[in-house]
Length: 274
Image 1 (cartoon, one colour):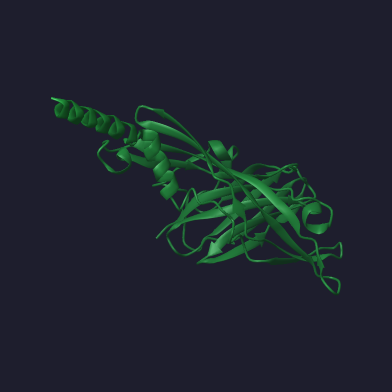
Image 2: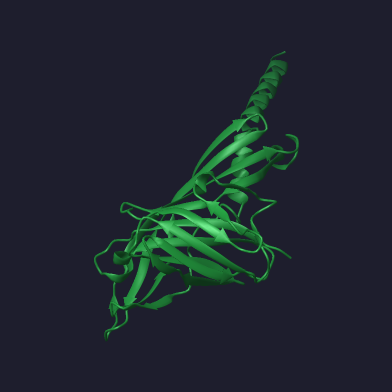
């Protein structure tokens, strides 16, 4: 009798432990996010190739972002039946490398870099609880949004995109602008894409960061004055999900020794058509 009671007690304990260890819907969605290396891997350790820019102010610099360390992401998940809304954010820390090259020897103006990156997404349960990740799949993704801290005075207010397939596309609220991951904004292979940034800083510098193959590229925007910056690039050739970062900094960040790192950036996911 005692053996039977002991056996039943062990069996009951095993059932309780098994239930406690059972994966929840939130666990499954977190697992999907942690396994994703396309949309939730927004680190900038390989940021972009160094660039050299000469201005009428008789200052020539080379600048780039060095490797960064990243905090553990903060993931907020809200589930309603078979839909889930996710907010993901983390801090990035490193150095903005700036070399003033119009003197001998060159002068190092490198500065501490600290910023917060955020994006949002939705997930749908398209399968059953017995499927991988309990049937959940990534459905839509927002633009990513980056801002420096503690100094943050510059902001991109809106972005206008003009191409053959998107002649008049406006983006105003990056974190509340969602794209179906199966139907991203698509550009034709090699087509010219014109981008206009509307910002709050007239005396600043804007750049497009993108990739040609595996090589990072930075393209400067033309400052039209009154906070408007315009640039054109030719879309890449290979049909994979890609990202374009629109990067804004004040003149003092790049072209003075004392100006702190001050940044606002939007990251746009897109696709190249085959």
